[in-house]
Length: 264
Image (cartoon, rainbow, N blue to C red; front, side):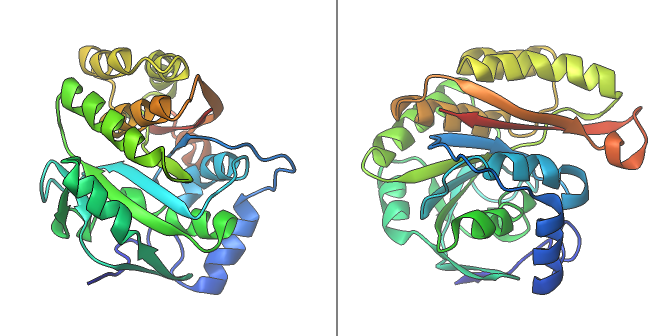
């Protein structure tokens, strides 16, 4: 089973040469790269959030194995699903799904194998071109997460971390921040969650997102990814970049905000 691109030509260029040229335009190289346990990157169209994603990916060493965690925007499939096929097709070539790692994730009860939840989901797909640019030959484990309670998210992260102790892997948490509110309000609200992530306080992240109605679409994948990174030895989160769509469109009254973070 092969997953074909769902948002090539809309969120990012479908033509390989155009895509590589666009990435060259967006991305700057970093001379010193760090070994991160996890990263948080946005998943909007590249014209809006691509530079923020680049600032993160350019700073970290990208190993061969990548665990992708993102929110389920479509509502299809199980609450937590891992892609059940073998290959993702991309404009830059085919990317293999790590079947051995998937087997362990399913056996541990972390996720159910599924195709439907991944079919049209963009949050993981948009990360692949960046990963190919900075990592080259990669294998991915795509996991899409719906709305689950905090205890389950925390335990899911801990189980994932235990599995990854035996691997050299990077956890990629895909999330945008506040949606469709004025830029200043978005910044104020998002800082609450960014502060929690910097301190790896996943309970604070989860419950304040709910309490203050902060529309960070991937706060549950972030709980999972941060808990896994803590098992792997992460001690802090570092904010690399924060921006919003209004800096591209000029409309600061109704923005989507983007954060880039590394967890080390």
